Image 1 (spheres, one colour):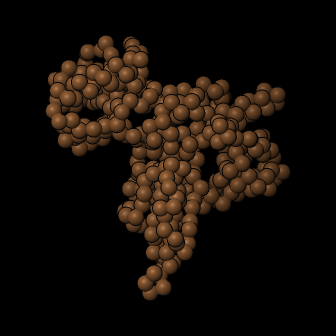
Image 2 (tube, one colour):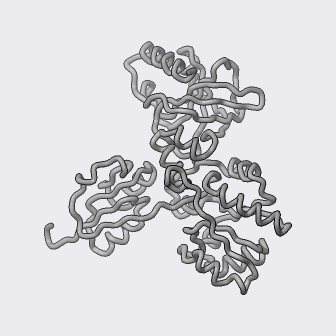
Image 3 (tube, helix red, strand yellow):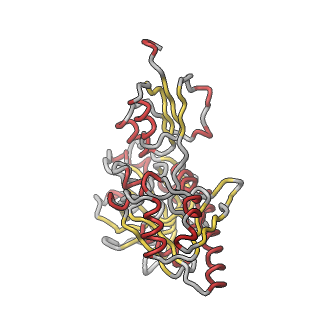
Length: 356
């Protein structure tokens, strides 16, 4: 390299925290890889446009150049009902035996979204969905802590004292082996064990729930959704991946070509591969199959990302109604058609696929 400049490269780069540190230390960043589109977009703005948005398991590693410094960051897991079910089941047994209540502590907004304000479409579940799923697992209470600047500065020791000891008065604390907490994530399972006697609780480290030898986590589930592997994601979730939203007014283009749709904003939900999916739509009055398109509607030169759902057998005004959309399988990628006739023909084929 020119002028003895040192080079660096990174896998699982995220928004670019490690890369920024390397850049400030004098390294020239040659490449970065992450599978999350939003992370790659943020990386390109923060660090460099030399970032590849791809699944590293499906990429030719020989393509990457030699670098002086190679970096990688472990994925950050957030909430996954499926992944935490094993721990909750263990906690329920302990609670019944000792005749005590069982609860879950969670944070809102998600810490990863708090620290990276540019990270928008990241959620698998909304807060309301998370709450309902947890209730379904049989917990007695849910503590939702507002994650803000003040809370993020709380040390691990203060977290134990103020939350575990004073607020919840925990007798048992169930955590995964890779649990991190407190300012700069300095607290871990060893920190919890260190203060057990002082604050009168017992730490229990739960074994991860595995699927095909991989730990079930939100990171893995999010990856499957992002890559449009919906069936695999649903298996890990132990339920269909669901988006809930209110129907908003559109330009009624679907209705004009014979396929009326309900338009729903994705808000902070993770965005899977753009395209058409087989779905089930549900309201208070019906539950029916349909097809959904996630994308920008290139045939109409659309600019905004939108979820459009054509519900089989429903042809009435659903504006402002809340719809639950369960994703079942990926049908095809979004594409731009030459004209509306070609689009109509393809939609008919999509519907045929979805009805199977």
